[in-house]
Length: 507
Ligand code: 5AD
Ligand code: SF4
Image 1 (spheres, helix red, strand yellow):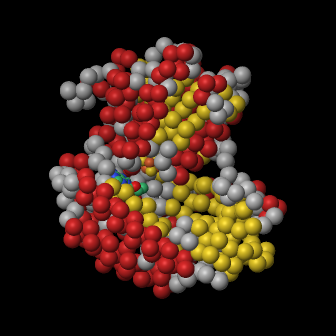
Image 2: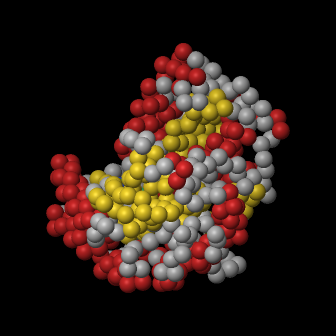
Image 3: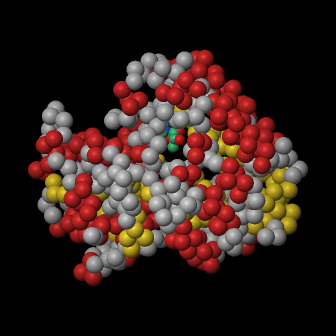
């Protein structure tokens, strides 16, 4: 069975069975539209692993004399998907451009996690209407997580008919044919598979950064936290085979990459879907540890699946960085329950204790949502106290954003907007203070830094990162870019550690 036929048939959406109040737009496009109802389903079917079959011969020259521009929003998973999309464009001989006015294809790789991210994209698509009018042959495309949402696709059909192409997160490998259809079709081309695709190996990729390489280890998420749209937009958990992941990491090491960044929506669930082998995230990290590459890190973890074996392996260090991003979301057991996080405040803290006991110099960072429906001031205070107790070095902090179709969107959102903003501010102040205090401990210390390049505001100053992902600025010759060096921290601040080069690090 080929990948394409299977998924097409599994997920083609009968728009007639969609809620009646939505207008049926199916006659305005060719292809398949998303359905949240289908996306919610989790099948027991095993995962199929497919090799990318290459660009069909007749499409290999599709991009000759044509240019593309991609705007990417959201997380590293999206950034990495963009690297694959660029790989496909280049395999079809398209050339990249930074100029909208010059582009033959403009593609938005979108994020659905909060409303703000979606508003930005709608604003951009609206703005490009004028350009599309001036240049009707321009192909305007939308892909990524927003494409997987029924409401988004309906809104585009209704209010942004100048969009030519919509495709989802499961069918990126179909880009060549979809693009051909968009170039030669009058109708809007939509192909979004609501049931996850399987795993497609060996897609072409053009990595943007020369030192750090993202590597997917798994796709999707089965956690269904009540606020989160990701399980719907990214489908069920599917792990890549260890031999494929390890071969990719080895190859990147050979190419000279210095840092491997393993990606998954919930990396700790890696391997749980294997039926033939017992092999989890701890095992994978233990094997990656043996590969000759200076640094390895991962994102993102779910505390519930973070097991002792993984902690044991991380404690072996070597190339495994002492940096763990461990989303906590809330410090209130009551709120965590409503979020369906499946752990309590005490269990989270217990995990932190275990990690710190095994890896005393581990730096922990986190994600926190404030203003979740029904969150009281007292419950927010529990978040504040847990943040302090853990001693995070930094945190991504968000105001809760209702996502249509998720269980939390149906909960009474009774926290006033001003209160949410106030809580966010108080939380940010606390996180910043903790970060500053902990950075202060580094004053006078020598740290290992991977030199990434020139600092943003001053080309005479170089920037790099510690093994704990802290940004360091220092003066050094440009030849040091790409090297591991030792820096003495002279002036630690909240976001940046200023230092002086001590020596080239031995690795
Ligand atoms: N509202 C606000 N923040 C959210 N996140 C996920 N969904 C939402 C939402 N609906 C945050 C979580 C997650 C991070 C990637 O985004 O903190 O860990
Ligand atoms: Fe945004 Fe999540 Fe999609 Fe990443 S996976 S782009 S964070 S919605």
